[in-house]
Figure 1 (spheres, rainbow, N blue to C red):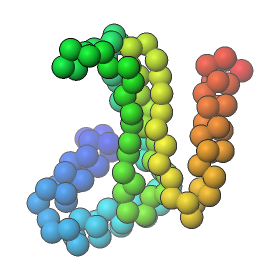
Figure 2 (cartoon, one colour; figure 1 turned 180 degrees about the horizontal axis):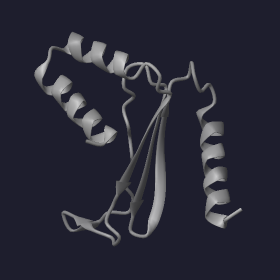
Figure 3 (cartoon, rainbow, N blue to C red; figure 1 turned 90 degrees about the vertical axis):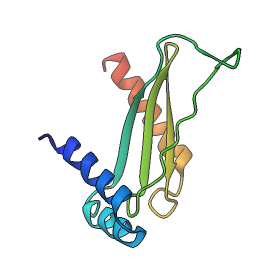
Figure 4 (spheres, rainbow, N blue to C red; figure 1 turned 30 degrees about the vertical axis):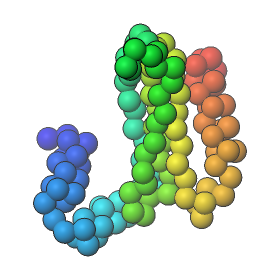
Length: 113
């Protein structure tokens, strides 16, 4: 089995079938060498409506697992790409600057530099 699938099943096992103290311990131990969680969310390639109103924007949020100081979600919706960033101030004191660096790197990659 590929590592992401194994990780997903272990996380599901610990979060659904063990007490909170055991879940916290497991996530802390399994994440000991990790510095970030990054997730991609593929949204609708077209605009959708909710209760008859157009959805203009989707907001991404990734709660930080214990011991991991950076969480980033990259998502697409209606032909646009956006991202959400969640940082622990002890590891990333200036999250806005970190976000600028992410945008600069995205522009560099997109431009083919």
